[in-house]
Length: 274
Ligand code: ATR
Image (cartoon, rainbow, N blue to C red; front, top):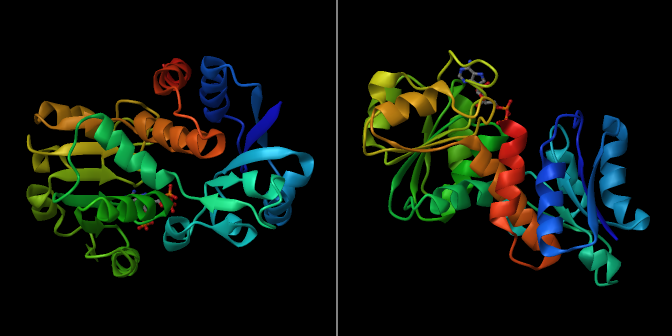
């Protein structure tokens, strides 16, 4: 049996175990997905050494995504983003490497969620609101997929710093948000605004328009105020569960070398959320 898991603190309410286990079941794989919640000072050692316990792959979540970078041999995209959310112990278990391979599948979560909804990224103007971990992954993902990216963040300096690292990107504060939204084809909410608070939105409704595709990284609630108002404005909307799904799908495919059963994983995830 192969053991996969999630390491973070806290991980108690994670939706990843049912999502991944639905995938194993659909493909008939003999595997389990469990959660680990180490103290902060033990996390890097646990990530570096989990292959010794026979662990085949780990997802990494808050607050260990940066620590994980130092515990693995990072893929170029994970190194550029500065965060690892997926660790593959395959190379260590086969004796091909001393360190596990680290990936960032949050980036693929953004692009694959949009592509699944037939949203074109290449050549489009993308506005990423937020410059934390989710914003970093979204900005790199969209720029690599051919979008011209602007990062807008409450703390303007964080957006400017991020934009300097992302090819062709610009960054700034929220003061010109109306103009930025008007000029955008794609809008990604990568802030925590709207999480557990259905009355909050990062972008006022009057700025939204029908030529937008809006992806919200927030998945609780599944229909945020931003997505409801974007739909009212005629925009294409993609909820945060799609991002969560496709970061998991991408990790599943890295670990198993098989096409993930997307429908089965999506059904399990949505059953947990609804
Ligand atoms: P994550 O890793 O999930 O992206 P994070 O690093 O804490 O989390 O980042 C949270 C993001 O939400 C940041 O961009 C933050 O803006 P600041 O950099 O200015 O802190 C943004 N954010 C959080 N609360 C916000 C609010 N009330 N209004 C606007 N932006 C907010």
